[in-house]
Each structure stands twice: as structure tokens, then as C-alpha cells.
Length: 143
Image (tube, rainbow, N blue to C red; front, top):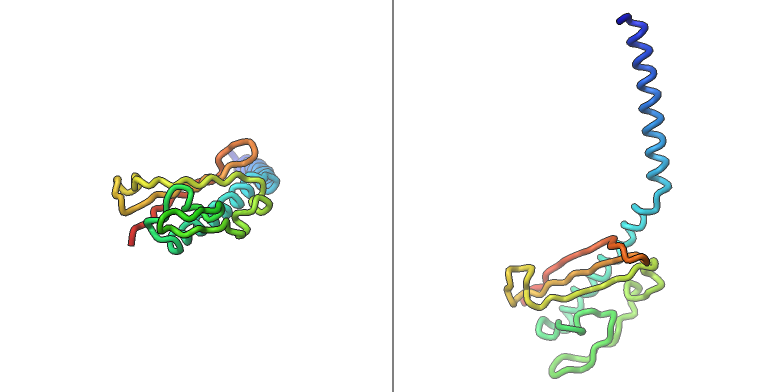
């Protein structure tokens, strides 16, 4: 191979690679999926923070069943206080970007090996088509 052939090869490969990188970056910028996943993660994090704060308000013993999610109202039950539904934007369907937010509470402590001093929370965010975009899990301790 001569020096001229090597230089020509380098120039051709450089042009091909720069074209591929340019096309890839244009495709990524035009894609809505990264933005949608980021928004879904923010919505899930806001809801998780509200749920974890509810435990501080009602206490571990009253942090059960339908009472754990601050976005739904809870009636007075025994020594557990009545709680109105939160007006926080994370509970408002208009601010969830059309996502469905599903919080689930596991009171068995399965996430911590079945320890009853823990309750496990899972917040799942799906889009209008039912595709899961984000899922957060957390454990709340009895302290």
C-alpha cells in the first residue's frame, strides 16, 4: 500500500463515521422517549416522597391499606385519623403528563426478608398505552 492509498482510506472512513454520528445524534434529539422516561421518573419520585411523608403524619400503625397514599382520602378508623386527599400537583391528573401512577403497599415486609417492621412501597408509572416507563421501590421502617 502506498501512502496515498492510506490517506484516502482515512479520509473516506472519517467521512462515513462523521455521517453516522450526525445521523445518530439527530435521531436521538428527535426522539420523545428519553423525555417521556425522565418525566415519568419525576412523577414517580414526587409520588414516592408524598407517600413516605404520609407515614410521618399517620404513623407506622396507620400506614396501611388505603391509608398510605395521600392522593386518596382516608376515613377515620379506630385510632387512625381521617385524612383528606392531598391537593399536591403530583396527585393531579393534569400534571402527570398523561401517565398513570400506580402506588402499591406491601405490608408483609417482603422487600426486607419478611420483617414486619418494614412496609414496601412500589410506584409504577405507565403511559397511555400501558407501557411501563418507570418504577420506584422503597421500604418504610417502624421507627
